[in-house]
Amino acid sequence: MSKKKKEHFIVGDVHGCLNTLQALLKKWKPNTQQLIFVGDLVDHGNFCPQVVELAFNLKDEEPDSVLIRGNHEEYFYKHVLSQYNEDWFQKSGEKTFSQYLFHGRRIEPDAELFKKMPLYYQTPYLLVSHAGVCETAEPFNPDNVDSVLYQRKGIRRLQQLQVYGHTPAEKAKYDEASHAICIDTGAYKCNKLSAIVVNAKGDIKDLIEQKTHHDDEVSCEEIQRIA
Image 1 (cartoon, one colour):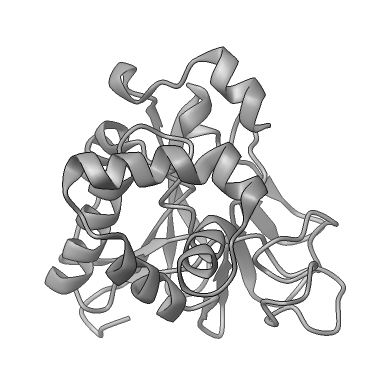
Image 2 (image 1 turned 180 degrees about the vertical axis):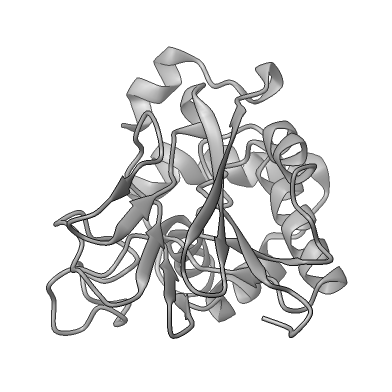
């Protein structure tokens, strides 16, 4: 984080909800807040390539922004660059790739970008990852099923505040026992997109919630299909 920026603006799982993200970002203060995404920009939602385009454009404009890799970026790039993933393609990838073709954004360059996305961001007071650190020997090994890409076993308490997504909840709520907060609030499930503001000392200063825009809503049938 640059010296002039005193806070972090951390955004939960977007999953292609472009209009909701655009509305949420109106509350971001780029002059004083570092922008961080917890991952899962893509899949499930209606505007995946546009969300990716916006996120990487923002990083170009504000180079200290951080785009954490989520499990869906992992699935995407591995499917394109190394190994075909039938389950992911049927549930999510086919829809996402169709959006890419319609929007005219190339798939392969984004796969390369996703491969380079970091698995976490940390300061002495804050650790941001996609799924959070649990009790495992190799939390930052992407091939570990209990890594910060995939795990759902609970959160290990660290000295740092942990901010993560991956497991949707109705509302983002700080858990004192684990000194952590999950900010995935099911944007693509017609709930809301959440962000939190954290200061340089790891204190949560604000919770921002943006109701899912009607153009971003996914049908109940599709939600059940990809569950």
